[in-house]
Image (cartoon, rainbow, N blue to C red; front, side):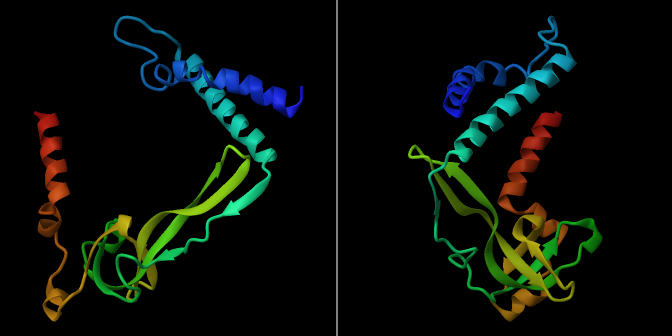
Amino acid sequence: MNEQELDDKLSEIGNNLKLFDTCIPFDYKNENKRYLTDRQADLCSKLIGLFKSLRFQIKLNSYKSIKYKEDDVINNAMYKCGTPVKIRPCNEKYGSKTYFGILLGDIAKSISISIDKNQDLKVSHSFYNPAIFVPELSTVIYGYESWWSEIVSEEDLNKLITNDVIKNVWYVKIFNSLNKEERE
């Protein structure tokens, strides 16, 4: 079997994988009836993963050219590099202390890869997140690992990021209210 024939077979199977996507990982058993055993569900999930990997691998093996999007690893569209910030890391090892930080910019944490209809491999930076250098800790902490805000004035220097400040962030309030409703 050549690559094209294998790709055709995998595509045929792949077009029907959605039948399994909805029942295996989430609802392979219910209160009254068991559709699959745990072992069968695990095996089916592994097979689905294998088929998806093989389909991509075959396309990857036959790519014609690489198209690299010329985007920057560091994006300074929102804040200028060097912007002073205050930051409270979420990691418990740092405690509940607010630190002084220097914003480096939004840094790409990953790359994305896709294969277009012309069999060209497209590569670009992705998953940008603010990176903040914290001199006192000699480390970089990302925005998704912390609570942080820009320091605009001298008064901002003295305002700590406390639990009360975090509790009053609009999306934290929404999350807490939804969480409270679920418990009731």
